[in-house]
Image 1 (tube, rainbow over the protein chains, first blue to last red):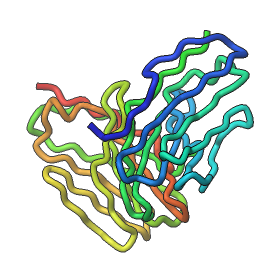
Image 2: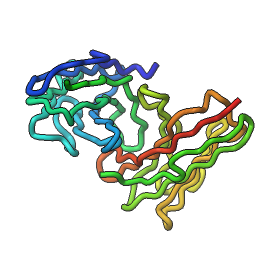
Image 3: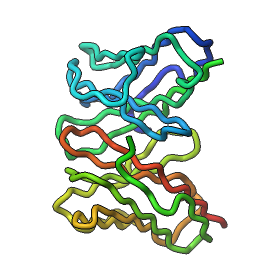
Length: 113
Length: 110
């Protein structure tokens, strides 16, 4: 058990819809990262938050947004969904220094019909 | 974009044999990490090696890092069926965000 909790485990929705993925980091971890895993793109970094503030941005589409709340949980919002957004979305957390491992949740599997 | 490239893409061995996976990357790094992913599950951190380290051990795992060649290898000794999984290398540079390779699928047969 990594200590990182992601909900829901599965989401099935239609094109054009909007969904929210939730992540609770490991106790004490201030950094939260979001990754997308798909067959064609592999594992891609989307965005990082540190103690409530955006720290780094990766290959995140403008239709996607995220935030980290004062209790350190994070949400990833995906809107105007397209078929190509179907993927596994992972949240990870780590401590506040660079040379630390990241701890991953079990992911949310998003299927767009 | 992918930073690392693992080699081979797939590896099939018998229990008890050693498994070696290689990873190459393109830019300078702060550290390199190896992760394991069982089918459809989250990634599990295996080992982190800093850019100023050359070798690291953890149980049956041995990782080497050659920054002059921008490459790393992961050796799993005395493989078990439970080692069957995908293995990813990931690098950090600048920020602590991870840039992953495409992974090696390891199948260990009893």
